[in-house]
Image (cartoon, rainbow, N blue to C red; front, side, top):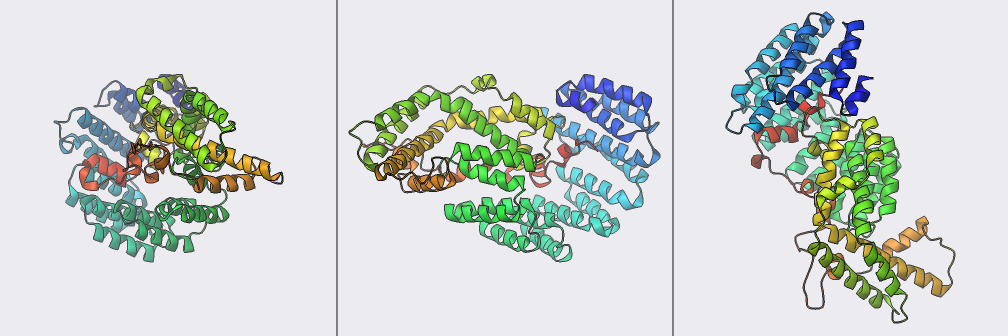
Length: 525
């Protein structure tokens, strides 16, 4: 019941329900942990970085909760203080994070003292990552070594992962690779080790090596969708054929992987791709959100699609209608005539969009309630774009989606002319294909069938590029040369550009490498 109120952005009402539950079952752990997170969100919203409401709830829990959960209460308190310290320093740039972590360190120490020996390694890892954020690398290594000394065999791969990330964090890529190499030999049965190896090479701008590691991983973990999805995205730089082959191979291997279906949707949402097709992207995203609802990026790509169809396309529908009317003119006799008209309307639409800039605030009027409800019910917890759009520890799925709505809208407003040109190009190819089949009297292939889509993709493929369409007879180009399909492989333009670790702050570096662990700790037990 409290989760319903929480996901509806009613934290006070949610907390009231939790209090009623605790009055009935005072030793029930999940209610206490839910209360901690609700109180923390309320404290941070008020700017109370010392977390008075949260700490009061923590002390109440210590006197009531089951004894075997005491260590976890202290761990929650430590991480809450750490999150508050990070937000405080972001609000006050002159403050040093290291000097604001003493309360967190004290709670980590109490967690270690209360923790069962077989779980102590989790406390050491969490505290080590905190010290990394503060720039105390030697202390972080010491804590990681303590975790390594006591971790049971089934948790050893997790320690390998954190050691590798630590060395990458400080800039020693070769040592990070060596650690992951050893981990692949000693714990090859854990697919997360392989995925981290792929991600490290991507961050090092070594896509060929990343693809090679992914292929080796898939020989062992043939049913892991996240590895297949990584391979599909990596094949983009090798060209359309290689990427589509990888997608088909992936769907045969893991037909119920939402991550792979999501990558398929991204291909069809890339305006530079000959297979750009909003209807097909919609079909892929239905499968993606159904098969793997915990993967947040699928919902964000669905959001991109909804903004395209409800915001961008209606604004240029008159251009599309007028262009299709021009196609029916008796003067239009061949492919050159059709694409000449497409180019003309693409340039006119592009200039109109530049002159009459789209206002991002207008997306408030776009109805995305149904998607927000689906996303809230799914409560996703991972994804590259998802982590990028989730900025606060108390963010619900609905909060993330609303924030993403404006982030994606900014990109669409800036690059609307590219998407519109891709739509017009496909409309032109569709007219040519219909005309060809009508002339030949061929009725064997139904419009909208798989065979029809294949022929239509080929027609687009053999037509002019977006750069050609957006260049007028005088050579004036409306498409920047630096922009390519690689900039549209996901729904956020900036997320498609590699980030150099050395250019990031310590907090940003930690968020990138450690997968937003501070945020993930908000997931309900």
